[in-house]
Image 1: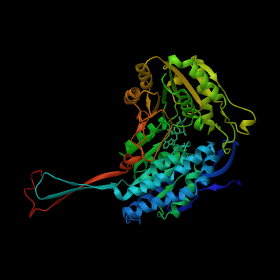
Image 2 (image 1 turned 90 degrees about the horizontal axis):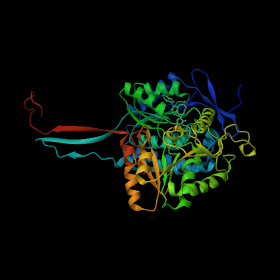
Image 3 (image 1 turned 90 degrees about the vertical axis):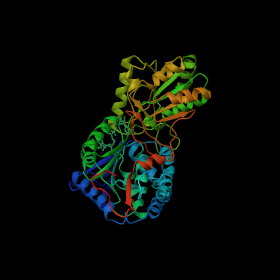
Image 4 (image 1 turned 30 degrees about the vertical axis):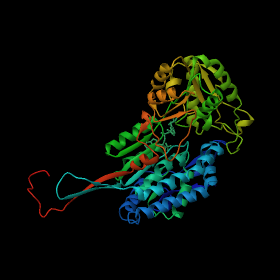
Length: 496
Ligand code: NDP
């Protein structure tokens, strides 16, 4: 019998043991040891969770609340998140091995989603339409969709969940969450705060387990109205197909291979920091990683020398140590994938300028998941290392001569999540940021997100938008109401 702490699913306001009786271990990437056990749910728990969410949506106290009351609960959840930020950040670090500095910054910022969308709940107004028919009142209402499935990945569990959960609740929906099998615990801890905020049982439910068991059962459940997914492009395509079969809405936030473009008129000190934050922050495990660095020919050698020198100083170590700059990769499959891409880059003829293999030694403790911060130069855009998402601390540097060439290389890829542009020229800022086909463009900065600004991908990086007003609209549908004020119904055989 295991002595590890156990985490059960959360359905209809109760902690629920899996019918199978099975649990799986969640492993701390820093110690490479299991630290907790999580319920291995299946279709049975999914059915219970979706039915609980459906009941809460249709007959529970949730639809009886007015938007102001609902918004106040969502706002209160923000207050509770603020008070529990460190505790939640520590759960995340134990599960995904990302830096405490990064996860704490994220958790401290999370309340904003709940405060913003909580405040927005009672500001969603319909319209009275100046209709072109006599003796009719026509108006619109923006109504919730129903049960929302939120499927989240392991890299930033609560942040990426909050992009979905806060607007979904504020709009009046109910939710079933499926966190990544690698990072379930912070989401389960959140359920305690949801109850404390007064959000009624069944409004938010969590089923834990594996994507191909519990995730697919959730997407396919007939009572689910919409699926909000963040994860890899391949899984996203499978989720999209399954959702389409049930004619469900879908938002997909998928992979990226974002160009970070350094022009010769850039402030090079800033651009070096921007390149580093684009790829080595979060150990490169972020969909918005600036993993394709495009550097103008005239400054290429000098810039790359500075970049490599800076990257060489990156301190690996215990992610819980605030002084650590690069932590382990989160999962063994991801570790294998990163090393495989390093081998591919070498075989393709890219020049390895830094790193290029597993990291070992005292800085890595007992972890078996460290990869050296790795930089490849002389990468050309036809190489796999320039085109495919690695999701690790591996940077590809490409050379360009002109603005037109930089734009062409930036756009010559299947992804379109984000891009960086480093230049002092305002004309260039506008021309290049207009020309790049990506959902987010950062100019002289990198890796900034906010609850206020829409986020999402072009091309294979996804569908729909999260955050800001657009993020709220994703969880509403519009109803048009026609009220006749005529004395009687005219000719019934003619369209009015
Ligand atoms: P996945 O896309 O496989 O997982 C994301 C979430 O989807 C997890 O909760 C997963 O469950 C679930 N899932 C997987 N398959 C299905 C399915 N068929 N139906 C419903 N849910 C499903 O990401 P991985 O964690 O496996 O990482 C693979 C790659 O994805 C990474 O190498 C990286 O390139 C990319 N990625 C992108 C992210 C982003 O932010 N855009 C985040 C994470 C990964 P479970 O984990 O239990 O299998």
